[in-house]
Image 1 (cartoon, rainbow, N blue to C red):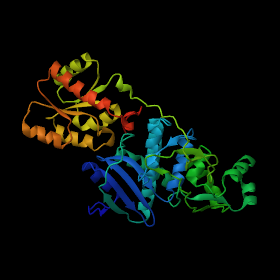
Image 2: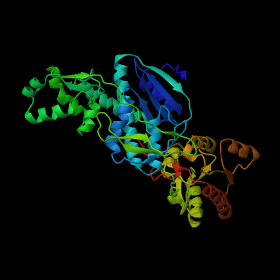
Image 3: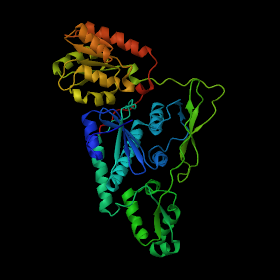
Image 4: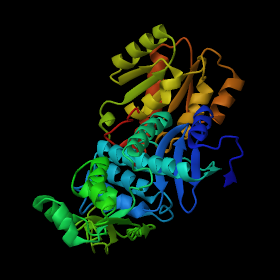
Length: 432
């Protein structure tokens, strides 16, 4: 890990620099006693983690967004249990079609929102230290979030929080009743009965808002009169225990998500290891819908060339999507998940080499055929195309026989391989 020596000393400045540099890796933000981590892919946010209640946040998100997760099979390869284990579990659940892509994206956006809010609150109290780790990117197939938009939303939440007079109150604090008799006199019978049941010093304000299904700001403001009267106080509580993640190596035992009792989230799920059955039938193979009609993408700024290619590809019975803006190529490719990508070499802003290199940084695209299309069919171009990970070369002008030959060669090869689970997902990129 290297310290970021940029002059930027605020979160907003850091994000601006990382967006401009299309940063891929991890940004660690060190507060007084807490560290958070933001994960990036090409300047977009993929995941956010850390803080004082990392495990508690996970259980809270299970309750809020993934309520049906009770007995789903999860397999994590040995070595995969890392700082971002929550994100890896989401990947596995989606690949096994136990949760939807939309549910996973909801968890990601909520995690990003909470982490950014906590960082902003800490930033008001003391300077932050920033560290950059240019590590291998996370699988970015779930979503890519615009950091500026995410920060703007978190700043609006923080502004609303401070306007309500809550600047010194962390949503990670837990309310506890100190004077039950006085509370009974101050509150209505219905409110008193509710508070006695849910305010027990074991749930944070965030936990409480999810538990009673009310907005965090509303819940906190409603407690302020009792806090001022000192019949309710706010206290720090520890994080919940980390779920038991099973690390497996071939031949793998089975790890299951089973219902267990966790503090403050009765009946919630945690990942627990179980012994494999003595004779397990092979799991059914999930096939990508595009195996019956493969989808072909063409990144090309020329409208005419796109129309010609569309005619040839569609006539051959393949699906087709054209991408005319090279800057938007990666988000659209993540959304549509094509089985083969034609990539024009000469385009404004970003050329085919640069886009091909970006595509190969995404784990779910590592085995997707990428075909460079150009009129400069020279040995130097072919060598450079190979270096950035291109699968093949197609010279202009394109014709029916040439296109068909490339499609048959590369798609037959691709579909004969064992399909990567990341290619069997039924969800797409969620623009933010």
